[in-house]
Amino acid sequence: MGKHSIEETLKQNPKRFIEVHTYKKEDPLTLSLQEKGVRVHISPKQKLTAIVQSDSHQGFIAKVQEREFLSPKTFLQTAPEKSLVLMCDAIQDPQNFGAILRAAECFGVDAVIYSTNRNVALTPVVSKASVGASELVPLIPVSNLADTMKKFQDGGYFAVATEISDKAQPLATFEFPEQTLLIVSAEGAGIQSLLSKKADFHLYIPMRGSIDSLNVSQATAVFLSHWR
Image (tube, rainbow, N blue to C red):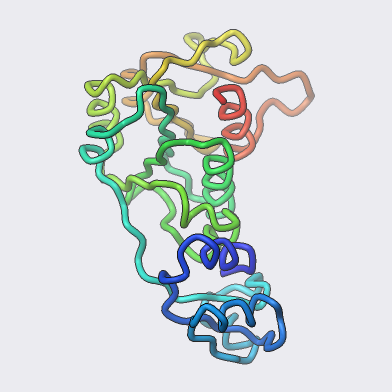
């Protein structure tokens, strides 16, 4: 859902659309969708809200073909020599996950790994918050993050856990490896202990204000900016 995510999907791959619902009959996006041959239904606002269980759809929701996902094996077979892959550990807030995907796309991350049982799924709220990035970033959904981290380490990646701990280095002095698996997690429980224990490096962002932490999407954008 959301105007920007639908605009981006229309720009990148209009064949993904099955149908679009909107109450904005004369909107330029409506006309662009129709020009591209997308089936557009003019529906009451209340129907859109009922379908996605949210009133923040900006007047547009879409049913799309399921996107393609990668497996760790498939990705590692053609992984770039200089590469960053982002691993999301238990990001439950759809706004945060969407914002992380947006940052990943903006900074050119090669893929995003997330857990199929510990992470929020690709919901309409995630799509809207990502501003279309959820349709663009290569995604690797997995059932076990620890096993996946090991596969990437065996494939030449260095695992970097982002956390505040005695082992962690400040971001400003850290030099990212050529192939980096960057692990981020929501505030609270933080990165699961097995991932932290098996990581090659630990990294934190020094704070100077009264508030001692950023939320995970903000922190991820800072880490990716420094990597880029």
